[in-house]
Image 1 (cartoon, helix red, strand yellow):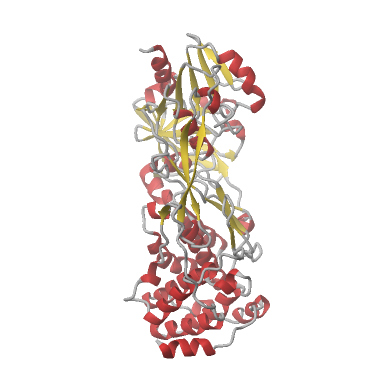
Image 2 (cartoon, rainbow, N blue to C red):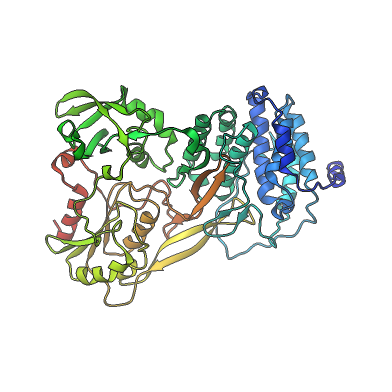
Length: 566
């Protein structure tokens, strides 16, 4: 151990690497000469995890002394040569030493007032059977020398978390090395700053080695963007959408079919048809689509579900069948549908159209003001229409109703947890608590503040409150549901919500690809998580095919029954 420390102490600290040099160097490589055999993947897994650890922990990197993309590009060519895993680990020791001395190890004071909700996970780097002890020792030395006196160069302690100084590499297809940067960058952002890392269906540590061959072979725009979509879907977060850059260079136009549909009772059911195109003569609400373009629905689901960035199966199915989803949309201007109406099935060859907002189903109960009064003196409020300017007027109209139905089956137009939540609850109580990333101990999340709403004003609403939710209830809508359901007179009715909540961090990936992820954990005050499971539901009510045919809203009907005590 003393010999190893002497070698590292003698290594000279290098100046910040110039990216222009590295670009010239890597362009002379033949990408196809790389191999993706198990040892190659293991070497790159070790490199990717070590690179991310250094990026967020090393004091000299946190002080902006090194360009970490350039550092990776400098060492990648050596890792992709036909060298052994042992030789690769020796290269890592040398490279870590070149990043300069870390200074004297400081004694760390433990803040007794914080509660840790998620501890760091160092993956392969903590596996002494795979990583030599000298590397583990070096990494421990770095972690034990925190630089809390500086603002880290690549991440800021903001809410939401802010990732900074990341190159986008232009809107062209990245070469192999830059694609690996994309993979390593995103994987480490999730590893150290995603509050739900420990709640994924597949362990995040297993994702990096799985995706190394995928990103390596992604040598076309479609292959690269599909690889990124597959990766994003693994964090099970509806915020993990993808847009911009190289995605726009695919030069493909997608067409869709002018219906709305959803999965009901295990079937792909038409819920509405855009009538001006004359398709209602062929397809009706309640019809079941059995195949699309000759492919059975089960096969379509199996093929496409893995690309959907959602936290639970219910929400994935909803996103699949949206207008821009992978079932109805295509580059083909015609669609072949096998449709079952009543007891007979027929196949139709029909025209697709460019997507139009007109194809979206509207709710018969909505009004321009966002609220109305239903029969029986029951107030109805739709958050996707309600604005702050309408709130006071709504309160005056709704105040003396027998009960209030709040429809959260959509995204709120305004922020309502307090503006409306205070009025709905006659006694202030907590409704949410947070977990916050610790940028000085990357990978650690601590329990943050607990938020309270409600009022002591006697003019608050005292009637029964019923909240309607389903998979369209996501992010801010879920937060709003939590705020409203903390009212002891509230009942939540409907189906599983999206389970994707938390202040959203923006992420830039090579190819100028823009994506996002939840960066703050959202929990009930008792610590119950909302990720994947969604908000708490008191009565599960799901639409039926019969209700679609007859035009009934069974969730709304149940809410009315609750208020009327039927």
